[in-house]
Length: 99
Image 1 (tube, rainbow, N blue to C red):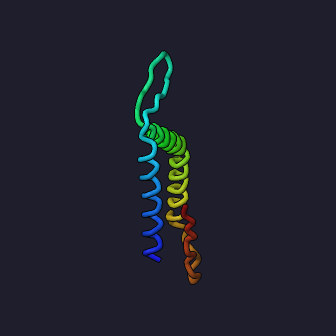
Image 2: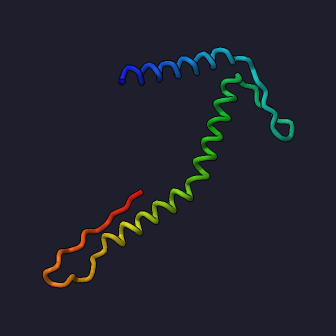
Image 3: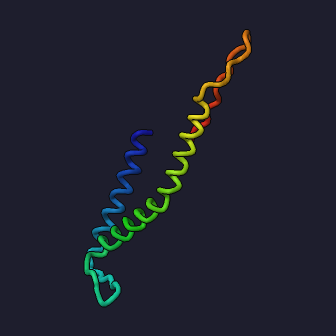
């Protein structure tokens, strides 16, 4: 199984490497106000992918913070000491649900 995963990773790498070698022509990206950027096509594709990844991560950050704070509040509520149980009864075990 380990060799199969290694082979899959090597195939993906060589496919992307061949893509980069086949797309070395200059591409021009036109921005606003007459500005432009000339670079090899593979760099333009990589820059677009990186920009999309960054925008996606930044879009998810507020939701991640909300989930982390909710998980901390839930963990704090579970860890808070329960009122004294009646003598002779078994203590209740906390139910911990994590994300």
